[in-house]
Image 1: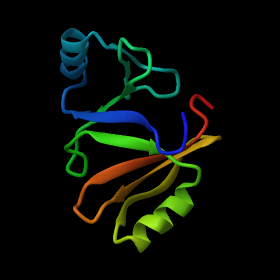
Image 2: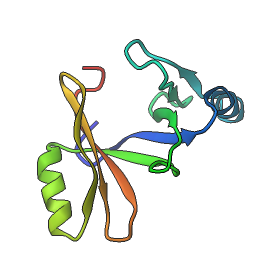
Image 3: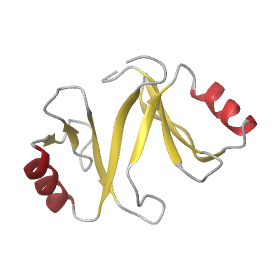
Image 4: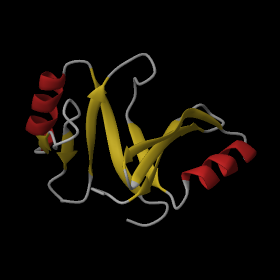
Length: 120
C-alpha cells in the first residue's frame, strides 16, 4: 500500500458472532481472528485486496471507519490540526512496527490513520 491508500475498514458490531455471520453470508467475506488479535476478527473481501475488522461497538465507535496509510502519523495529525481538524484518538502502537490514530475532519467525520508495516 502507498501513502493515501485506504488500507482497512473497521465495522462496529454489538454481537460479534452475528456480525461475522451477517457479513460472511452477505458478501462472502473470509472472517477470522488472527493470533494476537483475539476478539477482533479480520475480514478479507473475495478480491483479496479489501479488508478490515469487526470491532466492538461502543459510544465512541458507532459508524464504520476507514483507515488511510500515511508516511507519518505525527506529521498527518499536525497537518490535520492546521487545516481545522482535531484528534479523536492519539497515536497508539498496533505492533512494534505499526501504529494507528484517529483524526476528525472539520465536518466531524472520523478518519483512521495507519503507519507502518502490515503484519509487522
